[in-house]
Image (cartoon, rainbow, N blue to C red; front, side, top):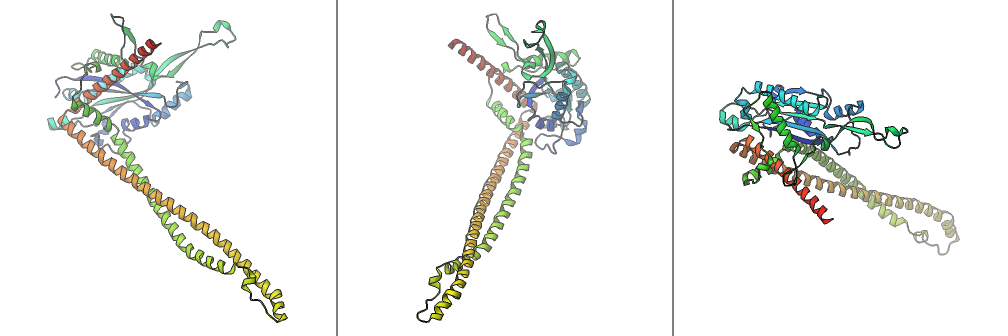
Length: 435
């Protein structure tokens, strides 16, 4: 087992559109978790310290807004409105102290810390997972070992003072507090304070780093010891090749379960649309096959009888009675026949248009079939590529402790966030200098 155990408290942000994916994982709403070592037989052992009942996270949020308990005033449609706080300590820490029962007590206290950070009324859900197998320790110790951790979904609410404006009829009220609203604002909730060092340089202290400090101190004051505060990102300056690969593959695998389910659903829908397109194409071909002979026959008849009646009826040379017959009987009859076949000729053109439309429809259906079949091939290829990535990751987990991988990933992310902030500050200083 690890010589040292580290506590971790990290926050991930979600929009209303993106929270559903995390909700399905946290509340165990997916049908399978093949790539996450979830033992569904132990899922009933997961502990809910807070729940929103039958409501979804979004429905719970909508209810609070409707009741006037919180406000989304001024937020964009895609604003981050949910925080997912994840509390974690190395698996070995709990395994060495009694496992499940000790983890329940530990995370009950961690839940109290979350309530203090957000306010009890702003906690949407808090669940300790006890059903995720740690394969590395399981193989090492020869019996099932589970990784206990907790997900807390909360609303980052801050109190915002709304002041009376100059439009107020009472001048004495202008500039005073009109009302205080409980507004969701992740940026204000987790604003990073600035300090000035002894050389006069301004530095930003990451709010999440301070969160780590508060969590560690809270748990230590509550009597939970023998673990250390999670390492700060600034200590991870250089990454080995292995760590870099772990980082990249972990990022890809974070969504693997969701991607797999979505791909299977999409593949089924594509196959269904492909079958429909094939049926439409076959129907169009059958209709075209029936119409083409009729059109050809009409074409022949129309050409034969659409000529001038004078050419169709032979001229009388001598007999008056023949001329009289021609003018009074034969010629009118031929004209009526001509009108009939002209109508048939028009019908021919109508059928020809139908045939052309059917051919276009057939071509479109064939095009859709080609596109859908290409999509299926692409999805199968992507699925095979992801299977290779999964196999690589599982191989890494067998060779490297899963907890160690998690520690590296957290350190890398904190370091990246720190560097990003440094680049922003350098850019601002450059702009100020250019002015």
